Picture 1 (spheres, rainbow, N blue to C red):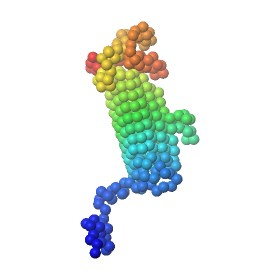
Picture 2 (picture 1 turned 120 degrees about the vertical axis):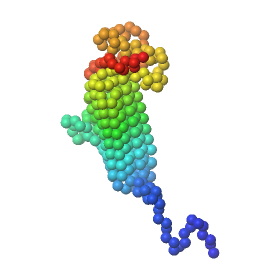
Picture 3 (picture 1 turned 90 degrees about the horizontal axis):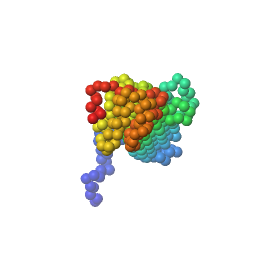
Amino acid sequence: MKVRGSNELAPDQPSPSPSPLEKERRLRTRTVKQGSRESMSSAKIHPTAIIDPAARIANDVEVGPFSIVGPQVTIGEKTIVQSHVVIEGDVTIGIGNFIGHGAVIGAPPQDVSFSPDRKTKVEIGNDNIIREYCTIHRGTVEGSATKIGDKNFLMSGAHIGHNCEIGNNVVIANNCLLAGYVRVDDGAFLGGGSTFHQFMRIGRLVMVQGSSAFGKDLPPFVIAAERNHVFGLNVVGLRRAGFSTVERDEIKSAFKLVYLTGLNIGQALEKAATMKFGAAAREFLDFVSNAKKRGICPFKRGSREDTLA
């Protein structure tokens, strides 16, 4: 007579009920049955999610309850899409991204001249965190794209308008609003509730105070607040980013030349051309020189002047 092990059931013994944890696991994930998409054969898709058969989804992507993924969407490995997310239009999402509840990516731009038959895109890189209820609209001009780089953190409720370009390692806090064609360079921090006019540019390592509003360009490395005002340099950010003492001093000199000498922009740039500056200070000056469409935010004296120390 065969002796049954402790984990073997007698023929007439009913199978044990799955644990609550196992029930939740089975509900949250299922293996997508193979149709024409081999790449989706082991992706974890909640049964209530709607995934178009033409979507290209990597093997280990997770898609939560009631999310919708359209036919022109590509999602890379190790990406998590939580519940009630809508990804529509021509959208490419890279590797290792996190997309929070209720986010909408690839919706048509809020442009009264936009025609639905235009072919436009959203392109998202790798290792981004896009939290709940963020909205990222696709481009508005035929063939154009809204672009987000790598390792960015978009906090809940942030809006990225059509044709925006976000660099790498950017933090966009809760309820920030970026109008169309805004460009944000690497390492910038945009405080919660801040708003940005279309076509403006935000330089590298800029730090923006929450609930501020801007319609002019913000040069690299500055601290900005209120309405279109620069208060100094992001000296802490420069140190953390590894800028040397010499580089920081040169940036301060360039800043003072543009903002604190009483010269107009043209005169300041002419004088700067006769001076010796390294690459970082030249980045600041070149940005100022190229800010011809909207101009740069002016300096405002105040309690933040210690940021030039």
